[in-house]
Length: 341
Image (cartoon, rainbow, N blue to C red; front, side, top):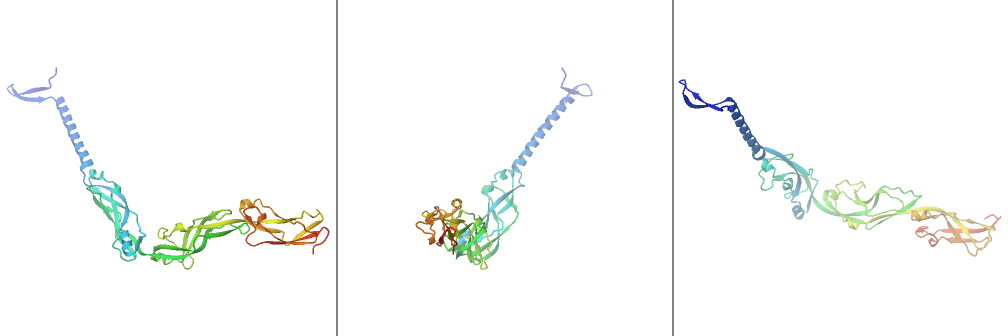
């Protein structure tokens, strides 16, 4: 069996007690020591990187909340609007252990408006609050201030009596429409500077008005004293929408021929002349599609007689009418072969 160590002899040939490890054994010891050192260094690196590094950073994007607006409204009758930025990106610094605790929703970015006392444009600082119990610091923000506007609140009543449609596809030959609205004026509330420019309101029907359709609860547009639309953020003006009902009732229109029958006269012995040979009727388009004429029935008439007839809606299909004004037709009974005067 091979020896793994030996004594060193002195020049006199006697053993002096020193031990010499052979080269193979020394090589194995060196490798083991190196592995142990490497493992220790790796553990230290893992500890430093994942736990104890204090100069690591992370970014968090936060919604900016406006505080103090309720106080401003209660004490000064003012409102806040038009903030130019809604979020801020914040860079924070801390150890990895602390950074891992971060929850973006627990941060708080605010703009305090409670000290505003006049209307106009304001540049205010954005304040970031770090969650309690997290040992990090704010290094930077992508901006420090926001621009916001304030104004006194004003209520005003304006006429609500005009109509606006994007496209009215309703040829006069095909029908008519009537507008029915629940009120003639509307009270609006908003920033004084904006409300002062508004002189009237229009109810807007989006899309085409088509035969047989009814539109309700239309959107409201506002105009200045020149009749031009006032461009604004729709959230700035408030009004009671539940009180506004606008119906555009569309009625079909159709021209139909008139005819005459006289049951007591001999067929072929007479004909008629009329003051008008066609009339216009109104109603639901689907119902009108089946109305192709109107027959005037004359009982107990004689040849040569002229009869005055007032057309009656009672003789039309349900939902069809001659309109608001009565229609009078003069019918003359003429003998066959005679010439009408």
